[in-house]
Image (cartoon, one colour):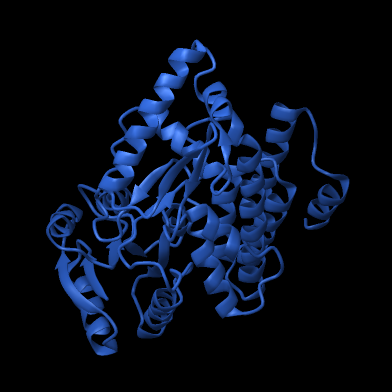
Amino acid sequence: MRAILIDDEKPALQHLERLLAKDGRLQVAGKYTSARLGLQHLEQEKADIIFLDIGMPEMNGLEAAEHIMKVDRNIRIVYITAYSDYAIDAFELNAADYLLKPVTAQRLNKTLERLVSREEQAAPQPAAAEQADNPWILCFKRLEFMDRNDAGRKTLWRTSKAQEVLALMLHYRGQWVLKDMIVDLVWPDFKPEKAVTNLHTTVYHIRKLLKTWGMEVTVEFSQERYRLVTGNAPLDVERFVQGWQGGAVKDEQDWERREAVLALYRGDYLGEHHYNWAEAKRKELQANYIQMSLRSAEYELDTDRPRQALARLSALQEVDPYSEDICRLALRSYAALGDFPGFRSHYDHYKMLLQNDLGIGPGSIMDSWVQNAF
């Protein structure tokens, strides 16, 4: 795996390079004293991992991460910081890990073990019959394709209706869907004749787009019905459902496998599109994601990683701010860190949110537990 190092402190860069060279598992493809220079490298050459200092002038690491994700969403970022408080923000930006300065060989070894393990066990693994260059179909957050050989390639939709029709067919993939049903859902305000004409034109453009991407996906038509056959094309939602685990995490290897599955969830199912017909499935998948994430947070707390658990739970609260389970585990994390002002502040904020938004208070059992903690 190829890595680049970005830190405005030259001694820190040299120290990290020496540690990585001694370890031997990563190839250092470049080291830079500014995020701008690191981004220029990524525009010319690919990298698998970036070791990125957070506290830099001109452009800090968290800002740089936003630009890095636009260049290549598959890059894993390991943040380096002198201040552990930044760790939560880092994990909200999809950090693979973070290292506190000064970086030690022992702590770096743990990070590299996680990175290598995820590379070897990356889930979901393509099926045996799946071609290595088959693009992914992504439905979490928005519908788009992902070319694993060209991370910057964009999905160019002819119209938003083409995107919606394909999303609807994916929603019912493998099942025959009546033409009239598609028309009623996508063009409810059009006259039937005009809507059907639009559907035929839209299907033509969808087939053309699939062909352009070299997709093993076909749109079939028979007896006034359409069906989408996805063949070996990998679909993020399908892989998430296959890998989902709702029970307790068994061990570190199980935790690693789950992390790869959770990473598929870029956002709510078709969340940016606001399709009414997708709402029930969106809620179901979101609930599954939260449950699986909570089990991982519990495991992190049980294995003395409260800061990592708190970073995860802070991101989860953005998804479901009213969840008592999320709040309870977040409070456990603050207690494990010995951060009782943070504990109190977090709970007070949660109570205020419930009161202002829902007109209710926390459950009596939880409130009693919090009061007894002080």
